Length: 481
Ligand SMILES: [Fe+2]
Ligand SMILES: [Fe+2]
Image: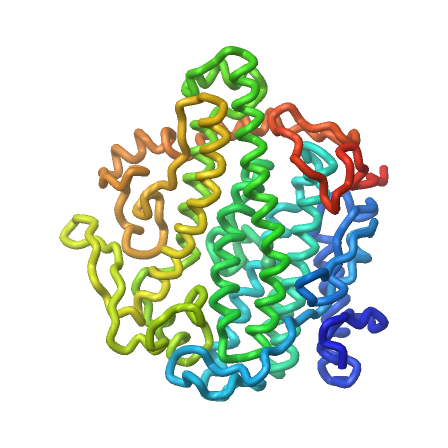
């Protein structure tokens, strides 16, 4: 079997020898029409007939795995791709440390493992649903293409999880796979499983913030699952991470280009004061304090995805060898965490304090800290654009107690600097820290579609290089009218 190159002769491209696994092949072929119906109903609205310059994975070789070509999205070859197996891989943490990695589901941990796969799987189609209307207001064909690339790959990530469900979980796996197509982002009766995936993505700035902050939660979760003792989950997560890198690139460069355009317009107009909101907005660009508010919103929603700081579920899935820490194999400790502690921010007698907790139950907090460190890197680059332009302003991540719905701080209100305030003060001041209706209306007023090749909306700078080294005026999407 060729595990590097993908077999495209099958109805479902794959590098898992599907043609020798008739049961799973039939199950996936049974699921496929429902998936396509979901894509037609909930995928990018108005562009299903357009030719989009997309990359498709044809290999899992890290040196070159994608081919670019024009594709109609419903014809995209969603496949099942697992990273190559590591020889003699061992369970890298937990009670089963150093036992051979499992190629089948360990019976005692089956329910826990299924839940991890379903939760990951549920986020993938959710973001496609959240973003489905954005094509109509794309600031350029370049951006439109990136949106659609992210969308088709989230679709592929759904396939990745559905493969695991069909192959390893029998009848209840099949039922879970159906449910993944039934739930809908934001639906009252069948919502997606996690909060941030039921929020609206009303505009392109939200899309960039989402791909920066929320896809990065996905990155952290996939890193933890890539450590899993259940080898098929590890391998599928590893390949998903290579695709996920592009999603975060879209977010980081997207926000960076908005920042750059705002700074340029301010310079041209001779405006130094970043808080001169009306003057800046009159230039048709988004003022920096409003960008900070959007950042506050998406960062705090994404923090909630890590769950409670202290969690026995997290401890159980670590002990079971199912979900490890970020870069587990590079950490120098016992990988069992029997006696160690980890500092957790908690509310103690009404004061936010750092408290040592058993490291095992503090795993969510640890992953969230790793996430925060990863988030901070992009802010440094955005701030560099601002300081280079000579403008006195810098983005900052809000305090973890700010605007939280889950965990230690869900019942209190705090400012972005972590000062606790009462509900009345929060109500009065929240529009200073989170996008107000007026901010939303202003951003919405800028969302006009630009579809001429090489042209960009006035609120965002062009990218420095094209996709697949294409020139600036490349027609990334051939829109079918
Ligand atoms: Fe994904
Ligand atoms: Fe993603």
